[in-house]
Image 1 (cartoon, rainbow, N blue to C red):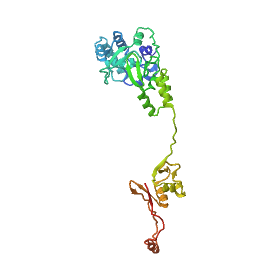
Image 2 (image 1 turned 60 degrees about the vertical axis):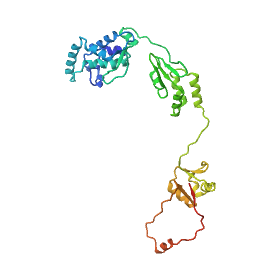
Image 3 (image 1 turned 90 degrees about the vertical axis):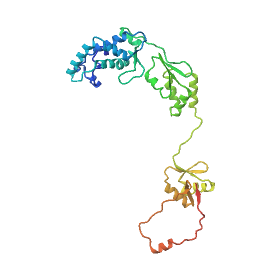
Image 4 (image 1 turned 135 degrees about the vertical axis):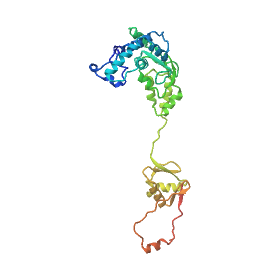
Length: 332
């Protein structure tokens, strides 16, 4: 139906410079006179042998030498004057027909690599296209997708394109010929699992195309096995305390107990996520424990007052009273 609509004209117009113009209503659309160009391209393709590839450069030269091209160019110039657009190049229009429209309609296959002008591309008429040009109904290959070995999946013509694209994150490209082969080596599946794709999702995507072989099925079953669970706890840091008595002191005393995650790993204390460094240093120092970082003792910022201290206070600050407190113990 799509091919017949295109060939009838009006719905597509490759001669227009802006594709959005194609959405103009039918009663107000002024179709360009490219019907002859379409028939020229189709006639040239029908002369190709079954399954034969031809370079676009050769086909474009063949179309440029056609006797009808001069008359079509005059019609295009007159149409461009009425539509107030630049006159399109007839060969450029045939290029858009052959390399853009017809592949989208499934009439031709494209091969090779090309630049912006299509140089380097080759094309051939598909069996579906040959049947449509002959006025017959195209035959449908109902071969289903299946695994041809333990790792290679051969995609059948009836498979939905969306199902095949869903395999892209973990499938490797195999043979590309009459059929498309996708490979599923263990390394590719392992990479998908490590990237966060669930094993159930992998299984569902592959089974949407073809039944799973036993090897891949067992691999996904093993990947879905849960051997244990771990709980994530947010933490601001880890306090490495070698002395178990100091560690127990910090963990149990009221000023510091709320600063740490309980239970903490052996040989240290996990600092709770909402605790800032200043608060940690002051509380630990209040219990006689210093905190080091890369061999340097960390100090809390001293509190400052806005008023000037009295004379008696200044004298008292210069005195060194004897203290019974033990020497501070360091924590790495």
